[in-house]
Every structure is written in structure tokens, then in C-alpha cells.
Image (cartoon, rainbow, N blue to C red):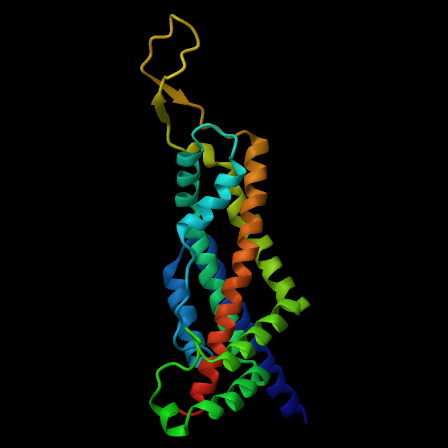
Length: 258
């Protein structure tokens, strides 16, 4: 009995230690841009059999820039400011998206219920022989209406899940608190100076052909911008997680026959 208790304790310690290692690797990747930590993490996931083919669809720069432009609508020279800001934080948002994609994929690959639903429907349209030779199932470009309805149903369940929404919200909040907000509050140090044609001189003595645009953002503007980006990040994070979850479910079904 004592030996069994020690064995159980050792197993718990190993799980706890591995959990801490994963958390450490994730934070090194997210907050220090350490790509080697990501490679180690992916190797762990692959060893556990929880992740294989990952193909996150990153946001386009124009979507992020569009949201920033809306916030800066009354700011002179807003186009260049928005471009500078979105370009500056785009790599950080890509890292966060990749993190959420991995978490969403793993959640989908571990969802036995969703995989069973997809598997039953799969054999309604695909033979076992065809399944063996397929590289992908219904990950992209779904033309079958019944499969599409199933995907929408699974995504709808995710959106209703308080656990999922809370996880993504907490992840965004932590990423912002530990990294993103500090970077945004220092944006003025990274914004380029802008020169525009001086079409409306202040007086007759103003003979300048060009004038400098005030690209400086006040503390109030920076805080407002931060809130805007956090909302964007949560909305985008939900999309990334949902797509990754669906891919994980598909690959789970495929793995049963490989």
C-alpha cells in the first residue's frame, strides 16, 4: 500500500513538473520572443501525441490597422501612425495567436465527443479506403452542407462555453498586463516623424513648404489605444481558437485510421 502511495505521488510530481515546464516555455516564447522555447514545447506536444500538423492562419496587417484607424479617426497623420503601430506590435500578436492556436488545437484533439460526431458523419460521405489516403479531412473549404452545419454547431458550443471564453479572456488579460500594455505605453519612442505639405500656413510669415505632424499620443490616447487593441485581441483570439479546435478534431479522426 505504501509503495502504491509513493508511486502515485511520483506520478503526480512528474505531471506537476511537466506542467511547470510547459508554462515556463510558453512564457519564454510569449514574453521573450524565444523561438527555441517554442520548438521544445512543440517537441513535448508531439511526444505526447497531442499535436501534429499545425497551420495557423494569422491575421492580416490591414485588419489590425483598420481597428487602429477607427480609434485615431480625428488624429492628423493617422494613416502613418496606424501603420507604424500595427507594424510594431504585429509580431507580438502573431506570437499570441500561435499560442492560442496550439491551445485550441490540443483542446480539439482531446475532444472525444466532437471527434465522434465528425467520425460518424465522415463515413456517410467517405469510404474507409479513401480515408486512409487522405492528407486532410474537412479542415478547409467545406462544400458539404451537413459537415458545415456540424462545424458551426461545434463552434457554437465553444462560444457558449464559459470555460473557453474565460480561458481566452484570461490569456489576453495576462498577455496585455505582462507585456503588451507596457509596449503600447512607450509607443511614442518608436513613432516616425511625419512631414506633410504646408498647404494652410498659419500666417503670411509662414513660408515653410513642409510642416511636421504631431504624431505624439497623449497618455489618454495610449490608454484608449490599449483598450482597443485588447478588444481586438480577444475577438481575434476567439477566431484563432475556434479554427484550431476544428483542425484538432479533424486530425483526431484522421489519426484513428493512420
